[in-house]
Amino acid sequence: KHKDDKNTLVLPILIFLLKGKLDIAHELILGVTTQNIAEAEYAATHPGETSWSVDHALTTIDDILHCIVHRFEGINKSKEGGGIYAGYDNAKFWVAGGDKGLEYVADHKLWHHMKEYVTKHHERFHCLGLVAPIIQGCTTRDERKYEIIASKGKKRFVPVKAGMWDEFRFIDLCALRYGCDIDKKEKDVSHDDLPQTRIKINSSQTLDWNEQWRDLIDELQLVQIEYLLRYAFKLV
Image 1 (tube, rainbow, N blue to C red):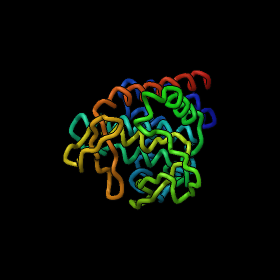
Image 2: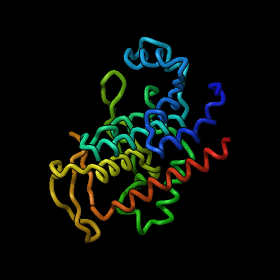
Image 3: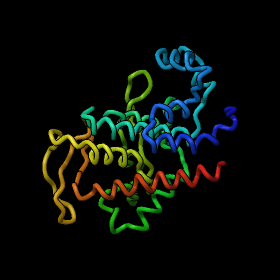
Image 4: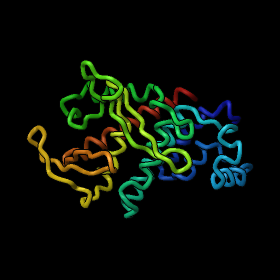
């Protein structure tokens, strides 16, 4: 397809994603074809030295799909013993716009849908804390902030606006759901009378974890994919 018709690729990207063909889904997102694969490989190994990112600019939906591909990659690598955060760091990078280095996560209907879903089923999902809290008198200093990888091997902090779906937290929960490293446990904590484990995510962040949350996270992954499939069918 011509790059102006790129949205028509959302459906095949999702199909390859669900079939476990992550490499193919990844290449479709990036605009890699049999005609430009050599150029793509050179651009990947020589960041900043080509015009690839300009010539194949990614949209918000591309970034979202890119995030999910790497999240699934993290799930697969966790199952294979590849480490708790293999793939997940890249997922966060693309949630925040990848090389665009957005100050906040770009607005998209998917995030509103996810917030509406967990709010509608508040009794089951409130324990996961997937909507950033709204606190009276809160300033930007009080926003949730996540340390993510940035271009050229650097790191940066990206906040989540109060009252918004927190995809960064969902990625962390997926990492714990599919590859929890018990050696990272700091201490047991209690919340709503449910036993939890406090997990160290990185040098500045910990996250509570409860084994009873596994089914909730599986359900939310399905909700995301179902919404994106409906979105894709509308595009075509």
